[in-house]
Image (cartoon, rainbow, N blue to C red):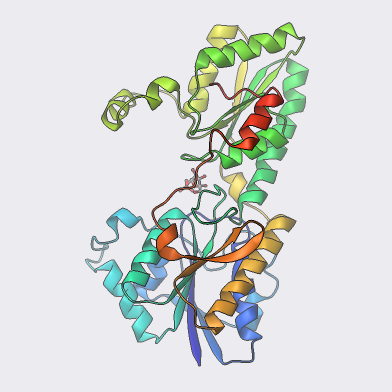
Length: 357
Ligand code: F6P
């Protein structure tokens, strides 16, 4: 008998269910005796030993469903060694649940923070396999995460809708795309949606360059401009600050987000009306796109195969168009960012897209 625990942790995204279905079907159809324990609401379920048993029927009909059938929560890694609200040692509780249920392995679906904790559990002696989820596509060790392509589609659709109204009114529009630390989502949705200006955290912007671009467009007869701005877009001045200086500078920040600050400045500098649209969590919601359904299913199947072969301690990732096994210690604690010198940035610039640099 194999006993497998499964959980989804961190912010949700599309195709979490598709990935779990991939693992579940592979294990349950293998002919081996398998019990699958689904821990509820992320690591919290593992800490508190809150789970439900998952059978064939739980993995049916979920391929197309967004969200996660197990629920999720954020359990910040930086406080993982601090006691929880009941005074319990979180790591010891997770280990206790694992050994009490006599689990052979944990399958953990998550992003960056989730992988730090997963690697810690591996170091503590638990068998762990992880799957890379996040709309940000910022996980080290994999070219792609599931959820990303679905979110790109949603953000692109938002920019498409803004295009028609922006051109009718001759306005400047800012679409704020998710991504506090990395700009993959903004870059891809911005290019797909034909944004004129794309601002990402990896390329600090100069507001004068943005104004210049808008004026240049006007000279060539364009009456509107669309900016795709990442949540974490940062000006050159702020990027040059130390952590402490930045913290002080942001103390009395009066805008809900950077997009509103940019909008304010552009309205003053250009004399045009500027509007901000924030699709927010819609980017993580709804049904996974076809790409993510296939991709997450493939990752899930491979995770199932590894478990059957008792190969643990890996994230199942994707490199150079191949499904690969990446040692967890190589993934945890590292961020994959957009390279400002990448070919895609050069190509976007050749198309006339301004990055504000
Ligand atoms: O990490 C995924 C993500 O959607 C980011 O793009 C975004 O900045 C963040 O989560 C939002 O977090 P929350 O759902 O906790 O508001």
